[in-house]
Length: 246
Image (cartoon, rainbow, N blue to C red; front, side, top):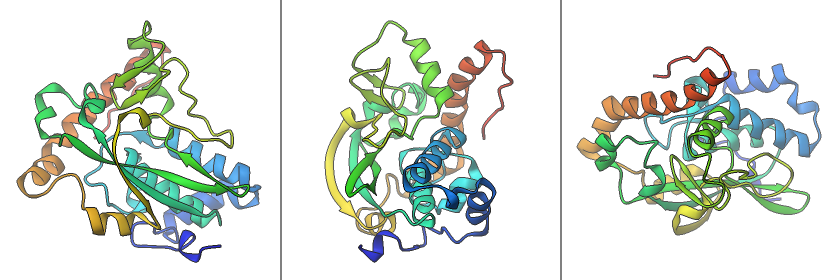
């Protein structure tokens, strides 16, 4: 066992009161490893909505408080939950082509996105093997809305936060095997890191300077309005109340 795969870090702050309270309330510690991973994965996938936080390198407890996140920030929370449950996990860093985000990011602010965007997935040690987890990025309602919007596209699809060979059935649920939703958009592979802290210390985040300030202060809120509008289409079709996201 590599101790660093279970260690708490500034980003993976799993001893934070809110994270510990969640685990205790859900009684996740009583589960076996398969179901511990599944419980944490499903929570991050569907109860933390797809959306854009102020930065990739925010703490897991902040992602939990926000209630939404994207690949990197939802990954921060998933890793923190897994380590809190005694499940070894590590960080795999990449970039993805910006075209993957077209549609989720409105055209009028798409200029802000770098051509190759920092991306990551979580690798979890289960039954002696490392399993790649990326399918948690999009919540069920958002993915359903995109599938309904592009109902004729059953196979390969790129856009709206998706890059998959099978839009109709991308296999994003935890079954003990790899899950993916953006894998087909990968450009650079930066390899494995013990933690997101280590990765961001070396590679930095997607934006800096004025662009970062604009993103944090204004543009991410516009993107989240667009993402929530797409998600609400799925809720409204089922007669559910749709809540705005900031």
